[in-house]
Image 1 (cartoon, one colour):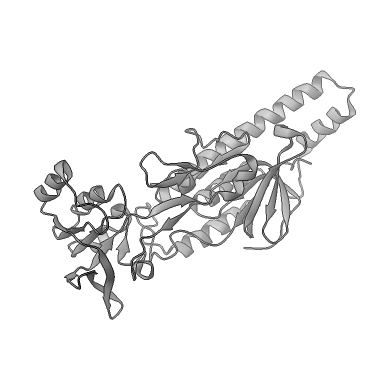
Image 2 (image 1 turned 180 degrees about the horizontal axis):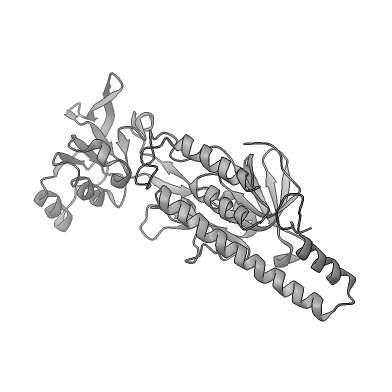
Length: 348
């Protein structure tokens, strides 16, 4: 991480997690000038290890990011510590790129933006939940199911997918209890499914978690009843970290599943705002680290192709008008590149 920030880049990547770093790596290897602006608040920081990532199973999240930053730097990319406050268009509209303003007053120009800022988990307001988050308070069976296999698992009804979570976690343990908490108890088909799978349903609001020697041992109901549990599954509301995109007219939308807000895009990561791509949890709430990294790389390839198409159009225009000084200058810029950095030129 560094505070060094040039005036302009081909691409500014906002967010230094798996999606952002993977995108930056792809762009740097494509000889693009690229900077990652990282606020340093990864969603998976509380977790002990990354899971489900081939050849990196169990690696601490901080180590994975450290390796990623080093790889981006190896190809000439920059990773800068900072928080983006706003992004605006240049004076000449869609073809003039972006001005990215940081919270500390710095700014940088970019021809394209890749937004990989992830999301924020809004946890249920139950005492103890936030303190245990990422340890024995969990949400994803594919991320943490193996670590709590055969344990006494509780599922707190805190979202529209809570019954689905209970049915999934039943794959890892035959001792699963569903706490209806402040939501109506399951009825109809959902109640039948839980019963058929041997999942006990407990009515009544959960007041707090019981912790002994830094281990979750139970769930206390409002009436004082304590039910022994070793892990608790919750369904947080997930909110995309994308408020700075409002200045570009790009707003988060409610996810069809009702679990939070995300930034919509097409299959390549392209948003409705020309020149802006998204990747990772900011648009795909269910993406694990591997999927987020893959999406970042795929979006980066699309961004490079988009820049190549733009540069080709400009080169053709210059060739057709060889007496235009501006066109000749642009051709020289495209051909020569910025050899000092071993990268393609940044747009002025």
